Amino acid sequence: MALRTAGSVLVVFLWSVTVVLSQNGWSVTYTTQSICTLKGSTVELSCSYTYPKGYIVTTTLWFTKIIDVENYVSLLDDPDYKGCVTYRSDKTNGHTLTITHLRESDSATYMFRFITDQTGGKYVGSPGVTLSVTDLQVKVTTTWWSTTLTCSTTCTLTGNPTYFWYRNSKIVQEDSSPSYTVDLKTEDSFYCAVKGINSPAVYGPKNTSVSVSPSGEIVEGSSVNLTCSSDANPPVDKYTWYKITYKKMSMRHSGQRYAIHNISSEDREGYYCEALNIIGREHIPVHINVTYTAAVLPWVPVVGVGAVLTVGALLLTIYCCMKRRSTGGSDATADTQNVRDSPVTQPLRKMLSPPIIRTEENDHRTWNEENNHRTWTEENHHRTWTEQNHHIP
Image 1 (cartoon, rainbow, N blue to C red):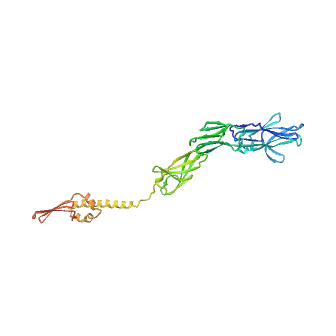
Image 2: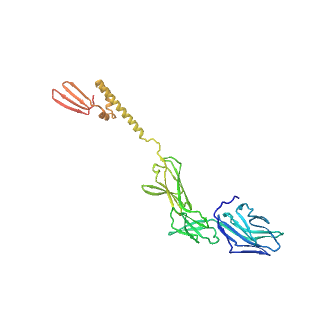
């Protein structure tokens, strides 16, 4: 077994109770029958022994295992205790076993044995000493009016120790009672200690984070999975998902994982994950990178075709007008009659056609035309009239 790591030292000395086991001058006296001590500490188990006159003690040992009849494994030779046990004897037949860096697995019954120089001259001190190794844990009890923290062990610590309470690493209580009543705040952490052995701290959720799967850009209409994680002791009791819409928060899901189906651009922001334990709570916002789909909208082709037709008609109209000017007007007029009457080009003609002024004289009548306004004048009858909104021949 590898050497145990160094830690705080709590040595338990017990001399108050004696257990004498005697048989015809052979005896082992233990200082106690049971010990409860802390993981990581150091413990000493002591005894004294007697034997009849004429015998010389040649071997002393402590053991927890018996492989076979008369085959007791000394702790000095047990690989589970390598580097962690020492023996110490004195001139008055006293013997002490020291175990350092205790583990919970060291909980066992320890017995002392000695062997003399004569056949049959050996003795085992039964029933031995029961060692219980426990760790420190903080238990939280909450009522409507208060919260109580208790420095808890699996057995009652031997020796009536003093309990120290720490809040955010600062000592706040030193008492023989293992309990401490406190007003909790989410950001606080608490732990207890006995003779330099500390319990794990208790604290509310912190370092809460959310993972989004799949990562990166999420296309609208697809699904996304959110997973919330947090560091807390005691562990998180409940994860809750909220959505803020129009400044109102509503609960959407309870559980560490949340699946959103048919996601939309409105789901980019507004989601929150809340982690809760008996100490406090923490919530963080969630950002989802939602992108629009690349679908072509149904009205886009219609607009495109309309734009092409309009531009084409406009160019044709300009071309015809320029040609009519260059040829005197009559042939060009006939060639563009159909274009002018088109419902597509008619509005454009009003806006874009340049002023057209034409004068003819026939049978003593004179008429002028300027952009759909035709004025007639007859010399013989002294009459003048105007025509509007007619097709130019």
